[in-house]
Length: 406
Image (cartoon, rainbow, N blue to C red; front, side):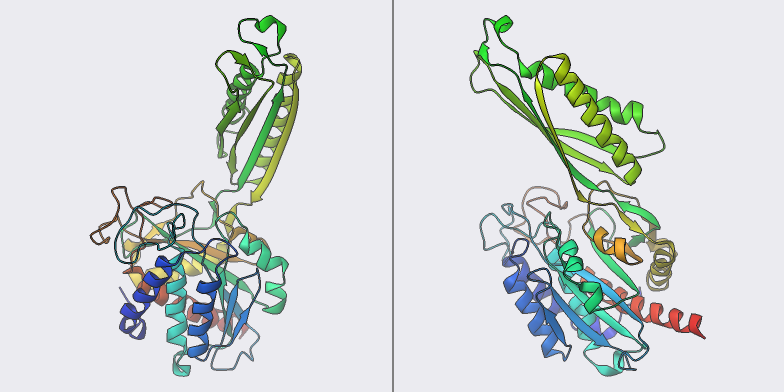
């Protein structure tokens, strides 16, 4: 494994910083303390800072040895927000804020990008011609912070040719990374179906219009969309996750509500699923003489890596880790708002192995070290690897771009 010495030398300091962020989690668009910490460190290292995009977003500006004169630029992105959940861990750096927790490793993502920034604090380390924009993004966990930064002018204020992201991945061995071209994270979409019938006494159903069996029919019918309408070679997940209706065991309710999520990799598949859901819901409701309201909200689009940028990232990984530790990236049906940046710019989103949880010190919770699990903790062994990857990726990108321009 080829790590950068200056980053390895600062690993303990950066791990302490990561643990400080972990102990003080902040939800989306509320990352004021975290953003202040990041901005202070960047300024301390002589890196110009812009604040306020997406409310709490921070952008650090690292010019290469040419002062950025070449006009070439890339963006490296880390997310900063925590989740609204209670932490089970009791070790020293566990959350000090009830109901908030860094259960997805964004504290570690922030530390890895700061590790690269610390290396570039020394001008002699800026072995490239161009500009690197360090993007510390708020509100990835459902808030669409990437979308907000883009809409507020991220790419106009900081013109860049490509953008890259990274996420830790529990279950992948430490010292391994994965990247691939094409879809790597699914789109995230929500639906709500409101079914209104006519309430009555449960002993006299003939005098009522019961919405409950109508809801059951819809749940079963929705499952046929993926199995019978979506092409078998395409990927889609349709899950009804909430059924709300009724208040007493001898009362037929007036209404019932279904909620859930749909995940796909392709917009065409999503269009098909939404259209079929809408038709089935309205037609089934009509057949049972119920009124139906159907709502479908598209949240995050699919995260799709561009081929050239994914290939570049893979070359960097192989140089650093060897081919045996550079893995094929298995797409996930989870969602990621880095997708909004990839809608605007070419780029690649990779995974870095977080291990199996053996890194956790005494006081960790009883559950596994999975993302969004109350016993999760980021593995600090990743900080020098992730920081070194960011540096080598930028250097390689600029070198190859310069070579193509000759």
